[in-house]
Length: 539
Image 1 (cartoon, one colour):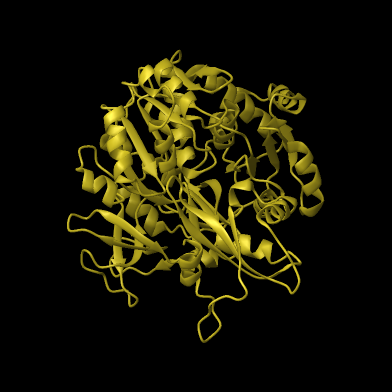
Image 2 (cartoon, rainbow, N blue to C red):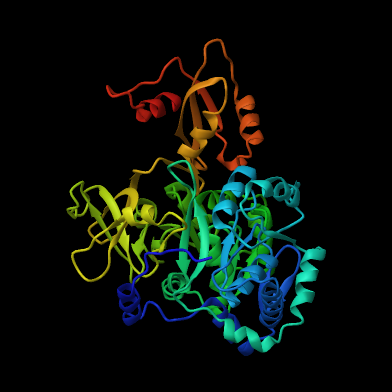
């Protein structure tokens, strides 16, 4: 399978000449560190740990097994695995033979998995038998008849997994180097929340993903001596970049946490000397409130990068009091372009809590008005970005990606319209001020509003629905379903959530509040005035 992209020879030449695209793929780094530091621990999860040499051996074995299964360059391998070392093995093995990785968030259920796998059309999908009380193979069995081509299913740790490894033993190891992909090939198909009723399959190349991690060591002091941590799912770009790949790119150890629990994290910091973690702001809230925090040695933890939501000033001060060596910085980005801005250690408190950080080297950002005129500092407008981390298209939706690109008046590349409103301060720091896209951000997790509304419209008792954000002290926002019911009908929150569960909607997308209206406030043209609904339900 081959996806059309927006990648051009001009962009390749521009980013290569600037030194941003180095022509590396992630398995190059694994090969290098497996040779240089074979006995160093690469990953630790809740079940086991592997050294760099052991990881390379497992990756090579799985890659040979994929090859025997007929997986070739450009084919898609989907995997819905928790933050386990097997996730790493599948991703790196797929990369080794030029296949495209399509990680799926473990909490996704029938509706999300059905659509995403249907669009990605993988030849093979890897899942656990069970995680957090849910069995994955029966879900795939139920979905298979709806797919044009059902992928072969491999279950972690079971016979299908072992059979794949056994089959790969027949492949000469010398074959693998010849399968190394080109750095400008697509390596990642990762879905982001859609605002038009369906998720979007974001396509990234090896060069865009390696480049996205390159500036981090200098900005945040990451190196071979760092011990990284990741509790966000590796199937989000945050987890993908800073959990699955950052350690390998820098020869550092990474500790994976498959179920977030602040008390467990504190114990992991003490046990392994964790120095750095990236997560949504609620994770920091949980950390500073963790029982027994003062009873553990957490002095190794010096960096906490908060993504996806503003950092309350009180939280930064509490973190400073309880963890004196910890430096908290905020960042902003999207699946389409990775992390675009992040704070600088040593920034004053106002920069930490009042901005979303400073641009990475190589990334350009601008704020424009409705006519495309660049705004002066402090003036709000539409946020546009360009640079080496920007994606190369949406899978099977190339025109959608093209419509979000704005032609440049110089030779440095087109601008990507992020759909967000923002302003820049006098020093070039970014502040996101709103969203032109209809998305709610709950603790760093995007809730696609149109998607949830479309599902709720299928309920026989709902005549009209509008999902809006309500403020939350910990998660920043939660979703509230505003509904107008059909005559004589009744509906409560529990019944609505049971309906969403039956429809296969992931639990984190369910509205957590329900308000019934007789009618919605509308404009003269009939458009629902959501700002009025937000005001009313927030009272």
